[in-house]
Amino acid sequence: MLKKIFLIVVATLLGAYIIFALVILPIEKKSAVCSGMNITIENNGSNSLGKADIEKILKGKNLIPTGRNMNEIDCSLIEQCISEYSIIKECQCYKTHTGAIGIDIECKEPIMLVQDLNEDQFCIDCNGDIIEGAQGDMYIPVASGRIERSMAKKELKDIALFLKENRFWKEQIEQVYFTQKKEVILIPRVGNHTIELGSAKDLEQKLEKLEKFYAKGLNNIGWNKYSKLNIEFDNRVIGTRR
Image (cartoon, rainbow, N blue to C red; front, side, top):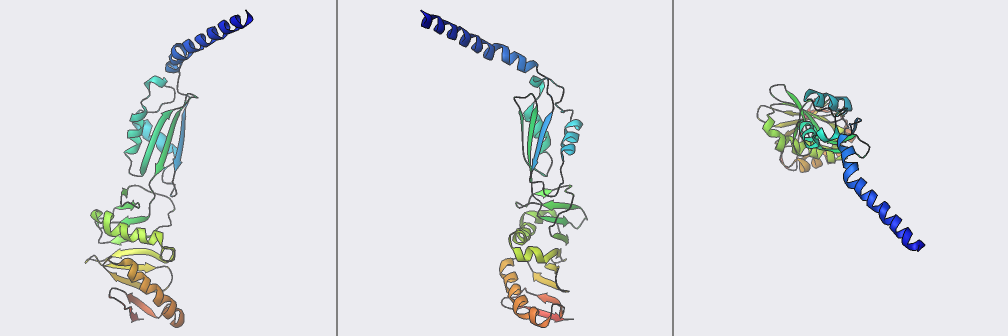
């Protein structure tokens, strides 16, 4: 008898919970007011984007969720608004169980700062995508000279990626200059000389040749002996004496 009563009580409580979960809880959730935003920003090495910037973006589009009913908030619209900015790689917006809006952002990583022939500045990432308005302290090479935006996906990306992935040259090269003929001149941090590369083709082989010359040549005769080092041609480093 007691067992039967116990089963009836359990079934009643279970039924009440199901009604609460399916009917009452959704009503309360729909009428709940957003308590705020939880914003996280990843891969923001240049500190180009802060939480205040995200709030400003959403405020400009009248999309600040705080204080609004949760059922009125369109997370996909918030994602779309934030993703319009070129520094954003990915944005995810969602409603949390605590009544807040979560916004998770991943930024693109600038690997080269560029000033084009119109003197407009932008950065590029490892895919050659253009990042507008990147700011802050960035320890990345600077490219200038006869540069057009169409070069971002090819010449600029190839050079920037190589410098990023090669420890020695990442530390050594601080500036990349393109001449009128689109030939490349590298300006190193160490040594009072410029490096004439010719085209960006076969970049790795050319700089590998120069690195050996540094080790066997300049370390013995001095780093300031030459004003120019030309590595355009196969198996040769042509130095112009100071």
